[in-house]
Length: 225
Image (tube, rainbow, N blue to C red; front, side):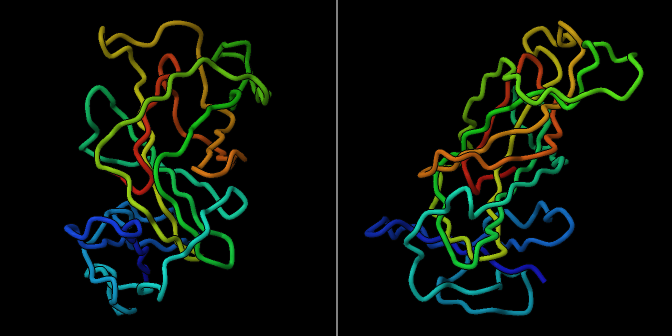
């Protein structure tokens, strides 16, 4: 049963918009894509039987005051089959940050996303026989931009719950609609994710994307397609 991720407004914030929740519960399988879509719900609602109506773990009696740190979070990624990928992007990877600590913490704003190394290193030749050693240290050229779909919100992330964001990419040079030039490339070996308030990286591995010219776009925390 999916539980709910409570979203609370900032202190003394605008009350014109009701708090929302994003039902999300970590399981052994990749989290459902629909689990990160905000669902309107009263902040005083308690646990219920169906996540489809926004029922879940219920609001905490008081907002969590500490921010989530890298040591609180585990990163995972899955290809997001969305037909709403905005131009100029073509592909979408859903990245989930799950609270693996024993207490609630907050996330708000934008995550930093840095690709590191290559998953395979075969002299840039796809026909070289395996095994191919990974490149663990190289920092490939990359350009990470923000995709501003909706304003960020403050999320209270209870143990076992996650907040997700999208990483968007292309395998072509969009302006010319041509295949990406240069040597054959592989997935990044890993990605370093940093959340607001902590410079320590959260390691994501594997990283299922092959962005042309190292260009990717990221959405705000809690904002997904």
